[in-house]
Image (cartoon, rainbow, N blue to C red; front, side, top):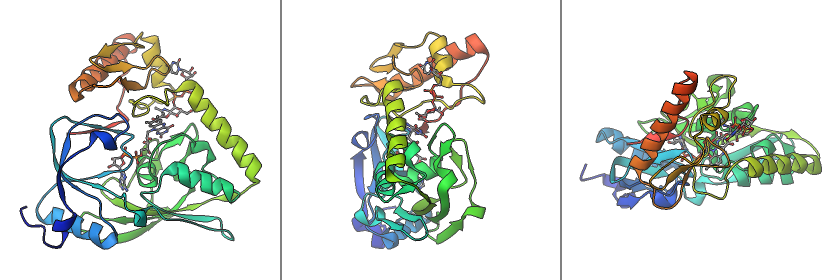
Amino acid sequence: MSCWNDCDALLRRAVPLAPLTTWGMGGAAEYYAEPVDLAGLGCLLSQAERHQVRVRLLGNGSNVLVQDGSLRGLVIRLASPSFAQIRIEEDTGLLFAGAGAPLAVVARLAMQHGFAGLENLAGIPGTVGGAVRMNAGSGPHTIGLVVEEVGAIDPAGRFACFSRSNLFFAYRHSNLTDLVVTDVVMRLRPDRPARIEARYRQALERKRESQPLGEKTAGCVFKNPPGLSAGRLIDEAGCKGLSQGDAVVSSVHANFIVNRGAATFSDMLRLIELVRLRVEDRTGIELELEVEIWV
Ligand code: FAD
Ligand code: EPU
């Protein structure tokens, strides 16, 4: 693992991940890289596989809980502008976006060009890659519904294109788990910009009213059980305001845990477990995590 040959120049060591996550906490990546192009990314992936180093992709870090201390393995972020290109084909309604592009920027651009399909995802702070991998969404509106094609690299560094028929999306899930998404084609439909904007504003307003958007969180911590709201179950179990160290269950939306400043990984884990136990004791329902724990 000492020599990564051509990729050596890309690698940084002991890079703190807290500033790269919305929870603003956690330790440092043993190895970290921001490749500048597909060739660099492919090289990193194939070398990591050769050296049996675990690779994790970090988007905007808005759905991950990173352990304290040193996180073993390589964390890759597609932060280079070459992974954030966005293009809209006006005649077909196809939108091409790099995986590193912020979903919010893509949604606004689509709206300005009079293309609908992403406006209901307003306020979701992920990258296109993270959103597609998680099938991010709001109510019945999920990004998977508009995805037409995904370009991705497998662990050996080989690039492949997945058309809609090879893709599978479910609630906060896709079949892209072991791949690095590099770019996404979305099929949008034309509509009047004013109408799209009205829906965009409404979606954002709903989120602002019901979620602690200005705080350090990772969105909903738990998935909704079928037909139920985890937030409501946690609220009804009396968990709002429950805390462990600087980790506290939001008083705005009970499925959000806020880092008040100096929450540690173990504060978060203890609070998550406490909430889970309270809900299970009261309802018999075992909540499943939506956020991904990186250890
Ligand atoms: P990360 O959190 O960085 O990563 C999430 C997962 O995606 C990880 O497994 C990571 O390895 C993987 N990943 C990231 N990039 C790639 C890539 N290029 N290729 C392959 N895998 C990749 N989510 C919703 O669905 N709906 C909401 O309404 C919503 N509201 C939120 C509100 C707030 C305030 C916050 C903080 C979060 C919210 N979230 C919501 C959660 C989060 O924003 C989404 O899950 C988002 O899609 C994660 O994207 P990301 O780029 O931050 O991914
Ligand atoms: N509720 C409470 N107390 C709370 C929170 C919610 O009683 O503390 C009630 C609400 O009053 C409402 C019901 O529960 O009657 C549902 O709440 P909400 O509309 O906020 O939706 P949710 O099911 O809690 C889901 C997603 C959110 C997404 C919203 C958009 C999940 C786990 N959560 O929340 O996604 O933004 O719908 O409508 O699927 C995320 O995935 O990270 C996320 C934030």
